[in-house]
Amino acid sequence: MATEIDLHLGKRLRRRRRLLGLTQQQLAVHVGIRFQQIQKYECGANRISAARLWQLAEALETPVSYFFDGLAEAMERKEVQPERSDMFSRKETLDLIQAYYQLEERPRRRLLDLAKSLHAEGDQA
Image (cartoon, rainbow, N blue to C red):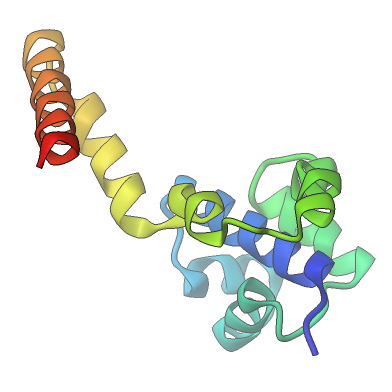
């Protein structure tokens, strides 16, 4: 049974892997395991040992402490709003951010203005 800590570490693992544009397979090869194990870590089904966490941190070019960032707060609120906390770990969000920053400044501003206006229209409806 997954604990809050296992789930938190898995979310942080997925977020960092996606941020670097790595597949589960690529990360697994780098640390010498099967991609299914990465899947299990990311969903919190399997616990990540200290040694494995160290390997993953090195492969993802981040300190081990990265995986624990926000854990205290998550434990306090017990992830009351999982949709909001998962927003930045979604592939769709990362794709959107990457595409946004590939635009020149003027189209980026126009896109941001469009998104804000669509949000405002939604609030009025």
